[in-house]
Image (tube, rainbow, N blue to C red; front, side, top):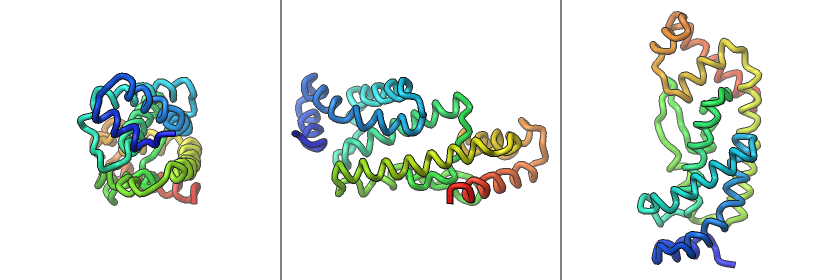
Length: 198
């Protein structure tokens, strides 16, 4: 059976429907399972996976061949899944998602994206991907449960800051709270999440 790398190289060379289809069906099962562990909705996971794989056709020129194709696709799917979670008011925090390559400084601002976390994927086997995905998703699931258990006073503020990337001042205005209260609740909320998933 052809590997991800072989199928990707074939598609990059030919850009043919046949080679795209072969790569599509090679990646789709694992990608769908990966997304489903994030969104907890099989139908939505199927939609996100198909949308991501469609981008493999339309935006393949943005792919850097020095990395595994799954590195690029999983990052796209991950971002899409987070967007759906935010839109349906799943209270999630990026504070504990350093496993996915998202780093946040003490001010709650993004310092890196996902690329750095995936740069070493080139040297890993497909089983390594599966094992790491399972481990990451287990941690991520614990984080979501921890967020869901937070008091409402923390949930909305954390989502506004870490997911919606709102400024502290805008969050304070939205929630009609003093700026320092907002900062304190964000720090406390992140601490509670860390304690819950430790």
